[in-house]
Image 1 (cartoon, one colour):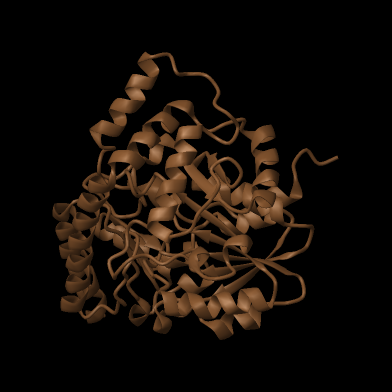
Image 2: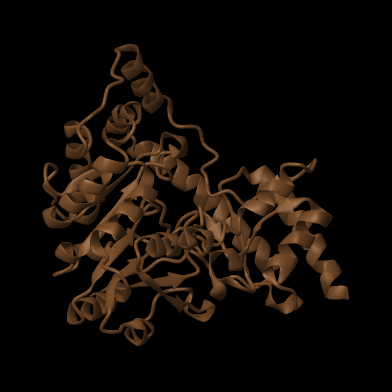
Length: 387
C-alpha cells in the first residue's frame, strides 16, 4: 500500500520558492519577489498584542473569533462595501485569508464540481480546489484586457457542473482591478447561472483608482458570495496570521465545522491586536497606500523610459511587465536576471500559464531598493536587445 496520497503527490510545488532559495545564498541581492509589506506593524497595534499577553489573554477564543473583533469587522465591511453582516452568524475569523479560501471551498464543493479560476492569480487557489475534490477550470486572462475577467470568458468556462467562481481582485500578481461596470456584467452571469463567488479582497485597501468596489455590494450577490479579507496587507500584519470570511449563515455554519475540527480558533493575541487595527488603523493604511502609490508610479515611469511594455496596475503592490520581446521564457528571464544582476523577481508563469511572458515585481520595498533594481534591469535588457 502506498504511504502517501496521490492527490497530494500530484500537487505542483510553488513556483516561487526556488527563486527565494537561490537569492538567499547570494550577496548583494535585491529581492522584489515577496508579497509582503516592508512596513512594520504599527506600534499601537503591536502594543495591543503585547498588552493582551501581559494580561494573560492566552486562552482559546470562541471558534468564530472574539465577539468584539467580529463586531469591528462587520463595521468595517459596512463602511467600505455598504453591506451588512450579522457578526454572530455571518462572520468567521480565520488563520489568514488562506484558511478562509480552503474552508470556503471545502464547505461549498461536492466531488467533481467545477471551480473557475481566472489566472494569473494567487498560487493556492488551484491546489485548494483540488484538495476540496473539485475540478479546477482555468480562464487564461489577457494582458490586452489588463487581466480583467471579461463576460464572454466567464460564459465560455461555465458548464452544468460549475459551482464557484474565484474572483481575485485587486489581483496578485498583476495588480489588476475590476471596476463596478466590470463587476455588474459578471454578477448578471453569476445570478443567471446560479453559481457562487469567492471574492478574495485581501488587497481591497490598496487601490489607486477611486474606491474599491466589491461584487458583494451588487444586488443579489451577498447571498451567493464568500467575501474574504484580512489584516496582512492592509495593516502590515502578515506574521500575525489573521483573516476573515463573511457569508450567509448557511455557508458560515459549514465553514465553522471545518474550522472547529482543523484549527479551533485563530491566534488569540492576533485577534486582540486586530481589534485595535480596525478601530484606529485607517491613518496607517492611508500612509502605506500613499507610499505604495509613489513606488507604483516610479516603476511605471521607469518601464516607459526603458520601452518595456507594462499596463498600468491600480491595485495591490505588484507590477507585471511583459518580457515577450526577448524570446525567453519567464523562468529563463528571471533566472538570468537573478544570476547576472542579482535581482530576484518572480516569473509570471508561477501564477498560471497565462503569466508566461511576464514578470512579477513587488513594490513593497523602499524607493532606494527599487531605484537600484531598475538601474540593474535597464542594464540587463540593454544587453539582451543588443544580441
